[in-house]
Image (tube, rainbow, N blue to C red; front, side):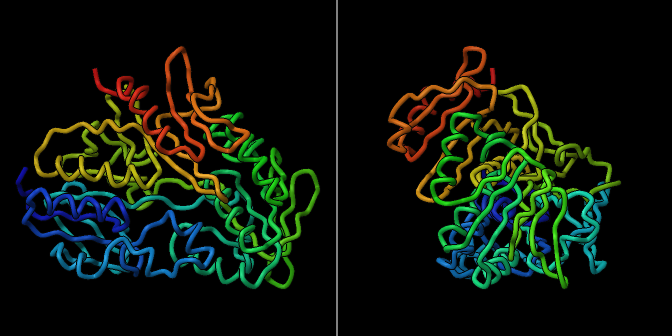
Length: 396
């Protein structure tokens, strides 16, 4: 396929934005290409931030998505360190924090996520030693504090909280994991798998305070000293990580005229308005195979969705109908989930043995397989995915 859409502006230069730019060039786009990003860094990968970068096994340069020569070959203008603050839909013009206005024939929104904060803390998250982790600078600052500290409390039992807890235990810190849910990744994976993962954390020495709310942070002299639970218990801490989830970074789009629900609402072609598309974590798209709206937060989706968005920018009429996928690495456990696992599903082991820490499982709801999960069994999970999930997620 070859084509041109005139000038294209991509807002966000992480995995989704960069992959869109690369796909546009591969498909023959010869027009002007601009990537605008709020961060000053060259495009980098986010999954290693909570693992290899945080552990100190990788220096920041290793997390870069592409080398300088590859970026130069895109023949694109990178505008770095400039947050987008407004979108004029009619003009397809984006205003940056410095007042610069960038116009294009097509705009692709790839602004990703912004971390959630503890509600009602009245500035307590500004205490020294309190962190959220979304970007490279966040991970590097936390890494320095983990090196100097001995006691970490992670607030949040989701993917990010579990990965940071596992990384910190590998560094030798005393780690407490607190969260509202009854198990690590309970909302994502259901009681069977999350129960195994929770026991894995406990076996590695993580103190678990699950099923209880965090009431406030404790501090002294401007530095955090602990986390107070609704039970009245205070968890002592030198370092606290708030990992209670993220929300789509759409605040700058308020008043633009775009539909903003759980992200930028798009049609099945990832189109939010005429000449405006969304890709990656920020995009809420209609999945024709499932007959409902989805927003997927993972690296694989960012890359795959970018191919569809680029093609549609150049005039294709291609629906995006992925089999949802996510993975997490915690300790020596590699979990890969294809489809839509849920706590309500019935889970059966199809291959392997959970007691031996290697198995593949099927999730079923209403008599239909809705997800496949591999625990240290990636090949088997992929094969089961091909057998069980392709047809249910294919448009009629």
